[in-house]
Image (tube, rainbow, N blue to C red):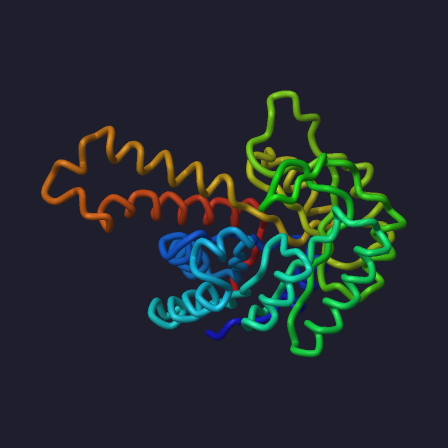
Length: 286
C-alpha cells in the first residue's frame, strides 16, 4: 500500500459518524507500532510528525522515507496517511516539498486575517499537488513545539470562514488541551462543538485526544469529530513499559541491555494503545 492523502478518508468518517486516529511518531519504534496496529485491526491510520519530532529524526524527508520503507518492509496493506502536525507556515511548505500527503498549517496564534490568508496559500500550494490540508481555529490548550494555546473556544464565524478556504479538515478548540489533563479540567464544550458542526460540514479534528474520557470522545465523534490526535498516551504507555523492564532487572538477564530488547516492551505498549484508541473511535475494518 502506498501513502494516500486524507481527503476521502476523513470525509467518509464525517459522513459515517466515526473517526480515524492520528498518531504521532517520534522514531522507528513508534512508526512500526502504529503501522502494526493499523494492519492488525485492518483500519486506515494517520501517522503524523510534529515539527520537533521531524527535526529530532533528521528532517521531513527522513520521516517520510522511514514511513514508506516500513510500509514496504512490514507488508502493510491498509491505507496510511503521512501528516504534518501543528506546522507553522514554513514547516507546512517544507513538508509539502518533502512529499507529505497531508499537512496542518496551525495559524491560530496569528491575527485571524493572517491565519486566513496563509491558510489560503497553503491550501492552494498543497491541493495543486494532491495534498490534504488541516487548519486550526481557536486555541488548543497547552504547548506544542513552542506554540502555546490557552484553550479558548473556537469562534463559530471564524470556523465557517476558515472552512470556506477549502481545507480538508478543521481543528477546533472546544476546551481540549495538549498533554496531561489537570484534575480540574471542565471537559469538552459540546455546546460549542454543536454550533460549529451545524454550520461546518468539513471533517472536524479533536486535538489533545490523550486523557479525554472515552464517553466524551465517543460523543464528540457522534457530533462531527472525524480525526482524533493521540500522542501523550503513547508516550506514557511507552515510558511505563520500559520502566517496568528496568525495575524487573530485565536488562541484567541474557544481554537484556541490548536496545532492541529494552525498547520492545515500549513498542508493544504503543501498539496496544493505538489499537485500543482505534476501537474507541469506531474506525471500521476495511
